[in-house]
Image (cartoon, rainbow, N blue to C red; front, side):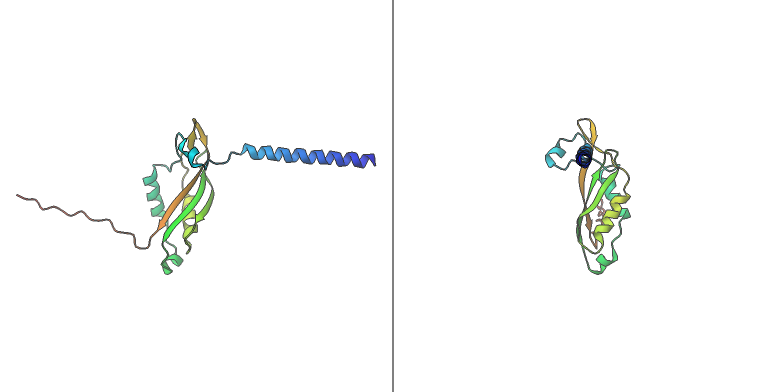
Length: 154
């Protein structure tokens, strides 16, 4: 009987030790910065290679308008949420806001195909930063206006 009680007490202490080790391991993994006040403190925000203009070019050169969305005349804004890791890779990519017709999965596909970003920096150290990227789907995008040639007066 003493042996069974001893075995029971040992198994409880091992279980609590394993649980505590798992809790400590969870604390080691930094959660991404999501607080807007903390984001303002960043020395450098995460950035697509070449900046926002290059990112827009990348998105709109690689995105496809889903046929289901075209057939149903679906337009609007999809928001993709992800984390820019310390090494610049993108993780936890998910559809935060969808408009249907396959637009959300298409926008997520584009984000998954992106090259590594430059990471966020806080107090001189690379940090994980949460990012929400809006992607607009518009069926008939406006055409660039042509500049009118001015007539020269002699």
